Length: 187
Image (cartoon, rainbow, N blue to C red; front, top):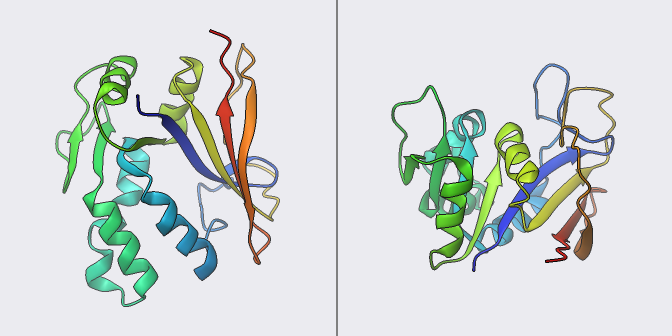
């Protein structure tokens, strides 16, 4: 069975965007970007909420407009990924993407049973719902050495406790830290 992994970039004080909605604090240097390029090879499917999907559309043509080999490589990897988009307002998507047709739990259950690589989920609201439903198997976070003091938190408040185990970590010259945790299940 495939794992569902919630991947995100966050400030040290726990925000995925600042108070104005910007994510410019999470601008990876060459070393970290190469790490992301390598990390993406673990996936063949991304599940997005509307807003994150629209932000990620940059990668649909980045290989045609940028000459940086790291950017071009990431764009080509991203374009090949299957993307499932959850939206109540969108009627079409581009490239290798489709709109979800089932509720989140059903869509994820079907994806997890299908053959393939790991599945990434992104978009704070959508991922929060997957967390609440206890469908996330691993959490991958890159922490940036910055305090934003406010903005959108990486996690909303939960009514239950989720036990996690650290399974991987890496530090970067920029001061960023990548951490991967797996969900400890008692079933």
